[in-house]
Length: 388
Ligand SMILES: *Cc1c(COP(=O)(O)O)cnc(C)c1O
Image (cartoon, rainbow, N blue to C red; front, side, top):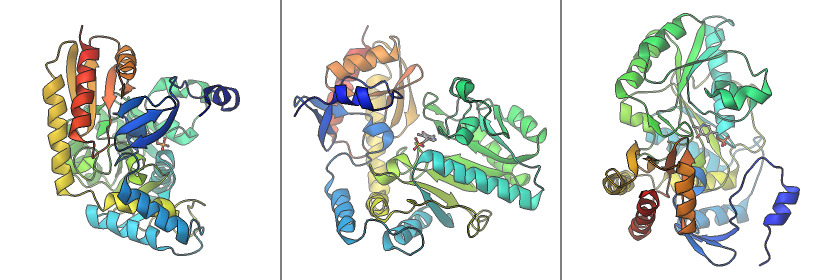
């Protein structure tokens, strides 16, 4: 195969500073580049390829649906869409699902829902949504406004009005902020992914939940990265014993095909009516068939396996040379090295292991079914790369 990096650089917009890796094929948790060099994948395309590459179950679900019907629009019913929605509700206790194509779109839908809910119940001036500093909610003009990181905003003002950011884990400040605005909703990630794999405190999350409930403010949990088994539960909010009004998800849900979902609870299931939201591709039968084959495998046995693998990573790396700390839950892990995280990432890549970074940390989001032997090898390489 001929190199294609130069063509990409010429013709694909400059928004990505790609690594000099030309990938052609994957098998399980191993990727192969154009020269046949192998890499263990500890990033899963940013938490997307939930069951790795060339996974039989997913591949069969997708190809079977492909030969039946690849798209119909939302003018008609299709089975994968209906089934996926019902399984998501069954597994969470949520009541209804809206399908889109990405995390940002899922959050857009959640924001529209919160605005309509609050406008109906309290008045159209109740549109403020509180989000956390260091959060990440997407790249559209509205989800950028929701994102609590100023450097993403700078070039694109004015952003959508009505978002206020408060520090994570400071309940008093959040309550004060919510009370000093006409607040419609609070939106959080239980573990801030792009923000550095910061696991929110249990007391904070529970406090936010109680406050929101008492004041009829909607609680939106962004599970785009943390969702679909990633943390060793179906969704990360389940670790906290709370019940969100809206859950948004995407990334790992589709196993590699684009899909986003918004899960509505009792208060929100009927907020959006005919014509008030939509998506041409949303609920696409091929994407939904693939997602269904993933969601159906997210069970207690898999979660126990995720917890075991997570513990292995924590045990190996927590006290390793050159590692300051390890954080995260399940197979969403942040490693703070003494060295610069992007230098560690480069050393890992040279030694056949692909990792991610998040702020000053190395970030790991391996496939949920990564074979133990691949994991052991990868952790060994990471350990060596961190070593001073
Ligand atoms: C990735 C991510 C998004 C954005 O998802 P896209 O599919 O890229 O639009 C939103 N929220 C969180 C928490 C994410 O990790």
